[in-house]
Image (cartoon, rainbow, N blue to C red; front, side, top):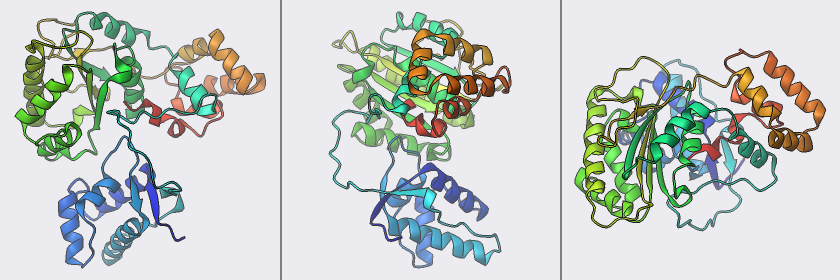
Amino acid sequence: MALNKCIFNDEGREAVISALEKLEINPDNMKGLSEKMSLDEICIDRITLGKMLKYSQKPKTLQFRSIQTLFNWINKKLEDKNLGCCPLLDSYYQEVTETNNPKVSSSRSQSTPSPGSPDRVITDLLWKLNCRQQEANFGNSLQYLQPAGTFLVRAKDLNLQKYLVKRLARDIPGFQNAYCQPLVVPPHPMRINFEEFWRELATKFKTEPTRNSIIKAISDRCKSQTVILALYNIHTLDDAKLLDLSDFWSELVENVRSQPRRSFRSYLVLFLTEEIGDKQYPFETVSNFDIKSPCNPLILPQLQGISQGDTTVWLKQDSVYQSLLNSLGEERIELLLRDISQCDPNDVPLNKICWGCGLKGVAEIEQYWEL
């Protein structure tokens, strides 16, 4: 299949990362990987490698030959070490039919499904699932943001973390015009080298990759616009990097708070997320929002999963039931209820709900949970 440009998806990215780990090659080190390939006279620059292997909230467009070259090189290495192979499957990429995409002036390219489409319907309905505890704690804290706040979101997996962060962020005044910057750790290379964190923020805020420059750039933006940062799976960072992050955030918050001229509707919010566990952090966390210490993360109630009861109550809501009745029919709703009844009473997978609603699982709508 001869392609010019295509989008390399998460399934393909995971396949490459798994193969590189078999070869004991660090998939987070783009420069090192590029140098290893150059020794075999294979030239793929680290920027292109980064587009293939680094997390991005918006899929990157690549030349197909770059993907093909990477797979060929990996397979040669696997073969040399008798480690099997890593086939380039058609499901790993999608041909791009429109190459001239206009740049969006917004700070984020917020994916919005077409009104009335199945993914739009389900995306909107899922915001009505029961997360009342988390929303109540977060909502009560919003009134005290002057102008900053830090929140620790705990959920059993990355999908639930993204879902919950986006759901909470939607309640922040001015969210529709906010500047949002999400980072997932891992696979973001800051997990290995914290300098990559500065480089990422410097690129996004169009400044130099130094702590002081980044603090100034974000503070300047906060004068007229809400800024929301989200770091997912921070439990994978070691204590030294967590302390660097905490020091940076504390300085940034103080800088923003001391601004003499700032819109009363501009906020600075940091969401930190973790899988549910017993991680002990090297900085103070709080159970009640402290207006004097907005840098201390407020621990929100954990979201272990969506229970059968939550799902049934969700389906009973007039707006949800009527919408699904119109799009699926009563028989399909009955099948969904039967499938839910066979799940763990305390953990109904979002995938199961999406399948029951006629989608191909969470993968079809998770892009709308990105900040």
